[in-house]
Length: 306
Image (cartoon, rainbow, N blue to C red):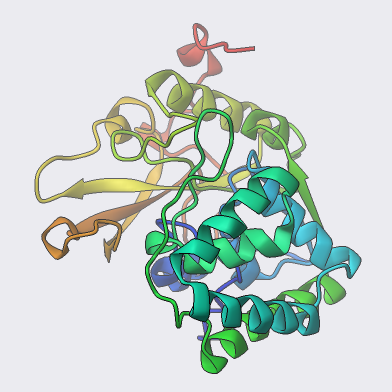
């Protein structure tokens, strides 16, 4: 059911697509039989708002996948989340940074999904970042009163909404690489991709470069599925050269978007977001639209990372 309300999932990620969900929904058309596939789940905000009947959400971060699989199996519920955050939040209010780092160490040893939620909501700027040993290493956000009654209720309601979605739809959460996920698609699938933005984001345990950007394009073309890709078009200083270099055959939709990533206000600048599709957004059937010619996979013959 399409509504104007945008539901925010319980796990936050940087670059979350909350503000452009309405634009995405306007340009996605699914049938009851369509399989929604997200190879880069992240927060899951797009798929959770599209709310398809059948979906595959995948990510290489096992903690995101583990959290949602525990909601799916009932090991995590909104009631459990409320109890946990009330107890842990009270300790945080007394012990401040000391307790945050205790929980961080505990999570890196035991990988409790509830500790992951606690860290995600109390760390600096809501970041998810791991070092090369895959240990969570985001510093404390220095808000000892973070888990107020209202804030806990907000998170609890987000979990409750996720529970409802999982109860009413057939969704799978898988920890695997993007190419493995894309290869699950068929001509009845719709793939939404939100990869790391090339030229803008590199994290501590993974990276994204031109070779991976081209490999992603090759895999999407080979899938024969309809797809939409989120990326950046330009900001005040430069443009994304890979839209013309790699994705030149795609239909492009743009919208200005602010990313509140920088610690200082002067670093928080607008960027023009781009949605790239291999179909026209007027309801026409899937077709490649660059110069009315079908793009050949031979254009990517030298891209093979397997």
